[in-house]
Each structure stands twice: as structure tokens, then as C-alpha cells.
Image (cartoon, rainbow, N blue to C red; front, side):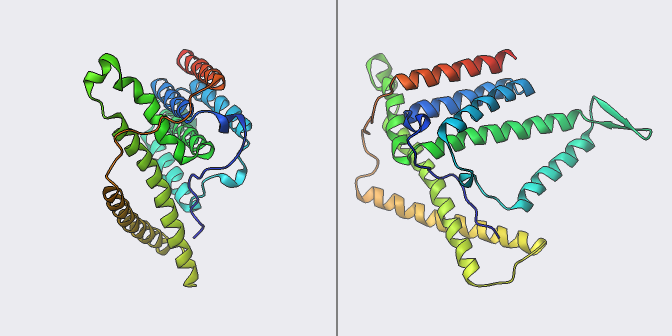
Length: 261
């Protein structure tokens, strides 16, 4: 079984790396909402062009891509495409006297491309943003809710920011636990499994990873409680700059394009 490589920070000094973490988080949220409202091929093409530009500026190496088992990818694609083809729908393709509906297949393909584009947007955030910058960014984004009239809403901004940061951190924790378990399996020098046996081995690895990660999460919670629990106030970190204004303007233009086309 190949090593499962999920999202990791890729150090760099590119314009994308230097952007404020909150700007990138807003960008991912905005483009995700935009392409979700209008999930058409032209809208997805606009998002793909924006992501291609961002990837080029960030100079992310090919080796940073997530690695998942090939059988899992083919299972997802093959089963989904087959079910969509069986569902039929307009337009119809006439082959040897038989009519094959391609409407559902088109919807399935758009959904798959949309999911991949949204995942790539989240991956760009993870590749170019240190985890330590996320909590201060979330705290700064929510700071207007703690001042003036909005303070009467009593929104727990610090707690929400800390929970979001911990949730992102746990994704990395789960990835690390899975990597260690895969390495431990390799040390045992078992013969390579194929077919259904390989699927059962993958399920066993996933269950073991969840169990170990849950235990680690419990230990993290106990350590936080011993230190007084969640902080009442988080550091706001650095402020956004002019580069962030330009980046948000580019995201706004892409959003307008996705909604218009």
C-alpha cells in the first residue's frame, strides 16, 4: 500500500505564501460558494483558471500533491460514472439502434470536477499557510463581533477561532497517525495484498487510525484543561496589507465571472 500523503505546509516566500491567512480563508469560502451557486462548466472553468494562476504564483512542487491508493480513485470514478450512465437523461446518444442517455453523466462529471476544484482550493490554503496563523486570522475576522453594538450578541469569537484551529490541526494529526501505521505495516514485511484483501487491509488501517487519533485528541484535551482550557482572548496576529486587497479584488472578479457566465 502506498503512503497516504495528505495536505502539508510547503515553505516558500512567494506572493501567495506572504498573503494573510484570513485573506486565503475568505478566498476559499467565496469561490466555493460561487461555484456552488452556479455549478456550470463555464463557472468551473473560471475557478480552474484562478486556481491555475494561484498555483503558478505559489510554485507548489508536484511532490506535494496528495497521494491516495489508485484503486480507491478508480472505484470512485468507475462506480459513479457507471451509475450515472445507467440513470440516463437527455441528451441521448444513438449507438447501434440503442439510445444511451448522457444527461446524468454530465451532471456527475460536473459534480466531480466541482469537488476536485474545491478540494484544490483548500489544498492551496494548507500548502501556503502555517497552521499557527489560522487561529489569529479567525480571531481577527471575528473581532468586529466583539465591539460596539455587535458585542451584545455575545458571540464566542475566541472559542470558535480556537476550535476551528484545533479542527484543522486534527486533520494533520490524522494524516500523521495513518502514515505511522502504514510504515509499521511495511516493517512487518507482509506479502502485498491484492483485491478484496487489500480493501480489508485499508479498512483496518482506517479504523486503527481513527482509534489512535481519538486517543491523541483526548490527550490533547486533557493537556489543554490542565493549562486552563481555551484562552479567553487570542492574539490577532498581523494585519492584512495591500497585497491582500489586490488578492480579494481578484477573487471578487472571479466570483462575478462565475455568477455571470
